[in-house]
Length: 93
Image (cartoon, rainbow, N blue to C red):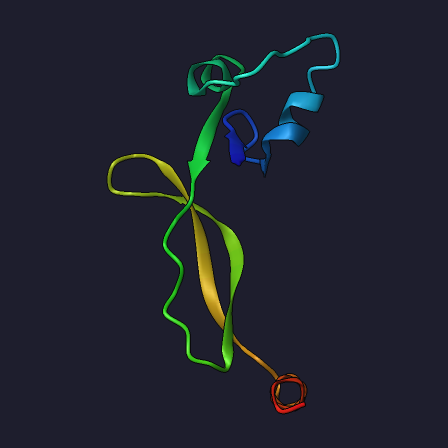
């Protein structure tokens, strides 16, 4: 799970964020309310782009959705011709 720190706008994984509170011991479960109290927002998983067989998805950041939630943003990237050749070779072996 990713979180977005309100003060800086930095996005990081939850465990990294919690490690920044060195003098605090957290017990499970870590709730959305606790994350909010610590000054961050939960980042929800956004939609994946539609991909062709010669593309892959890459995380590029976060944005607010229409409901005001932070969501991940992905975009499609093309495999290089070399990557396509290697993929084809592996499948045909």
